[in-house]
Amino acid sequence: MPEIIFKKRQSVKQVEEATDFAPKFDANGLIPVVTTDFITGEVLMQGYMNEEALKQTIAIGEAVYYSRSRQKLWHKGKTSGFVQKVTEIRIDDDQDAVWLTVDIGDGASCHVGYRSCFYRSIPLGKIENGRNVEMKFEEKEKKFDPEKIYKGQPNPTKI
Amino acid sequence: MPEIIFKKRQSVKQVEEATDFAPKFDANGLIPVVTTDFITGEVLMQGYMNEEALKQTIAIGEAVYYSRSRQKLWHKGKTSGFVQKVTEIRIDDDQDAVWLTVDIGDGASCHVGYRSCFYRSIPLGKIENGRNVEMKFEEKEKKFDPEKIYKGQPNPTKI
Image (cartoon, rainbow over the protein chains, first blue to last red):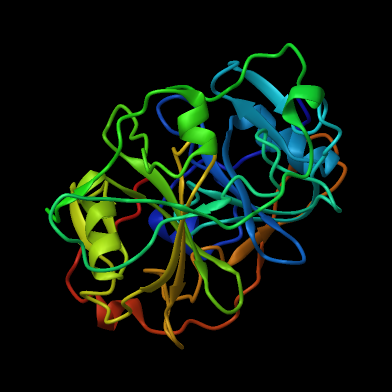
């Protein structure tokens, strides 16, 4: 693990108003991460990091997550080739959420093949009794064929 | 609770490739939510919704979260006045994360007083032994004074 030292959390003032980096990991040792595209601003994915993943991301400047389904560090793009070059890291007020801004070029972030994992929208509006929600595809074309790229690997999506 | 029906999760193909809205809530009944500004694209906050919060958000078109610290539904802006008008809702590939795009006008999203909760950045780069991380303020001025707006209320940040 890279030798980087997180500060101990001591007070609300320190956590919110100071420059001490004192991230808070949950009961499973994880912190949620939202990743956006450095040009378009679109949200590409939502993931998690443990302490080591966060330190490696800071050290190498490429996104390293913790995969909950595989239960190990996940240097994003090592299989697909779509590495996320980090352009900025931010932390929120109480330091329990991370925002990564990344450069993925003309690549993709989603294991299904789309550029963003958030390729479907939910219609807003007044709900009538018994209404089912029908989503809309906001991305029409996949950037790659997951059956070729992830050949033989299990799909991480859990029912 | 508004009468809106989520689909039962039945297969990976249904969850990833179809228009069925079948969100997955975690062991605590929550789904993580990232909220971005509809004009600037900046990440304003990261929060959580339970089933009812998600249904209300779809129904009324304003962000309703679930507050983990207060353990109840949280119609954002009811105290501060900074309501989040939802312009789009998206869901990710395996439907266990929500992306809200919102209009907050010239308001703020952060209880500390800044526009975005992510007002500090972490420097990237090679880590030297024993290096502490010193963060940088990316927002210089608060949009409001939290001591006036939230007078007498406990700060939600936990150490």
